[in-house]
Amino acid sequence: MAKEAAKENPRIELIDGLRLVEYYKMARAKNVPDVPVPMPVERRSRTCPRCSGELILRTAKRGERSGKQFWGCSNFAKTNCTFTENVQ
Image (tube, rainbow, N blue to C red; front, side, top):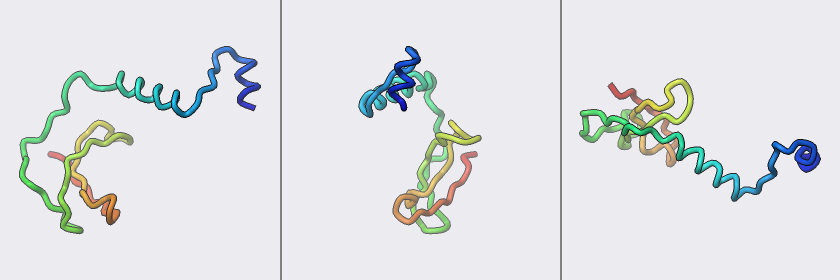
């Protein structure tokens, strides 16, 4: 079905997974901000109140807070602790 659509429309290019990754990297490189993201003044170690893991400064990649920083638990991958705290 995809091959048929590509034959009928010259604007469609069929690509493999490697080419898709190359296109993705090129698109991401164009979206890198010219200005570095500011780091909060507060640098002391922070602890998660739920699991006692370390809170890590992260940047939201999607959603309404995309591009904004927040503190997230370092145990997210290990224990699925979803505690977050806004950077103020």
